[in-house]
Image 1 (cartoon, rainbow, N blue to C red):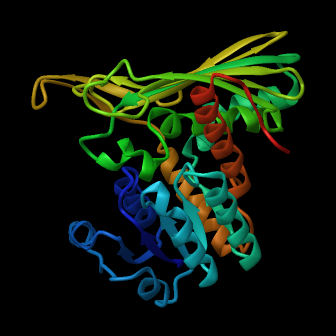
Image 2 (cartoon, one colour):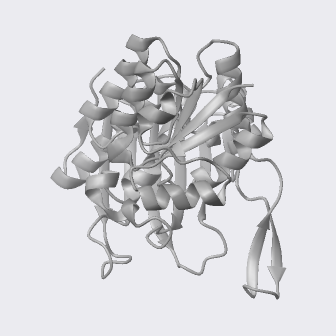
Length: 330
């Protein structure tokens, strides 16, 4: 049974991951958060011990950690975990800068510990089926992708998401990485050029970060892709949002909406809502993280995968600021 620590509870997904870890049989030893009040409250709600420092938690014989702190603090926590010999599952994007993101990957590689990026969409059976179809050539020559990742702005649940110092940006930093990773995974190579535009039309009176963006990626084989990333859902939307993508090839097109698995409820409180059902891709991801620890191997979604997706998001932010395409370095 792997002994797991949680470093940071700022990210929304940590509330699901604790249940996933327990369902997989992990021994969740405790949690550290840089905000003691927040950390102690979260620890009490989940029946865990809150440790004052990351070092105190890491000294408990930890096999792996799940890093769910604000993005700006990922680097210091991952570096501490790697130095302690703990495998790492890190939320995305990896960092708020190229320097931090490179340092996260390098620290784990130098220490010889596995680094997994939290990309649960990779574990959707529907997405995997499309990827297998593309890889097998069932659709013919690949030409283009389009994707959307839209949600409610998470200001009420976790206000740090709209602080550029902590998150690196707004909706673009939050929502580019998932689809950027999926498209790159299917092509088998990173894009060579990124062009993006962003705006703050939605929620302009509330925040200073971008709340919507459109990103164009060009891959070395001529394949191009678009990503519509936004926080355009109303605050009373019955779900946080969703993700969908289309593949265009010579032999046809395939569309997938992997998160569209819910029952529609009328009545009760709230008066209208969606009840999710079906597969839990977070659980599949956590299972893979723990299996990689147990089997002493690299996970199927690596830190290098996360690094590419993060660099795409950072390039998109640069392009939106300058109005010019950005070439991605090898």
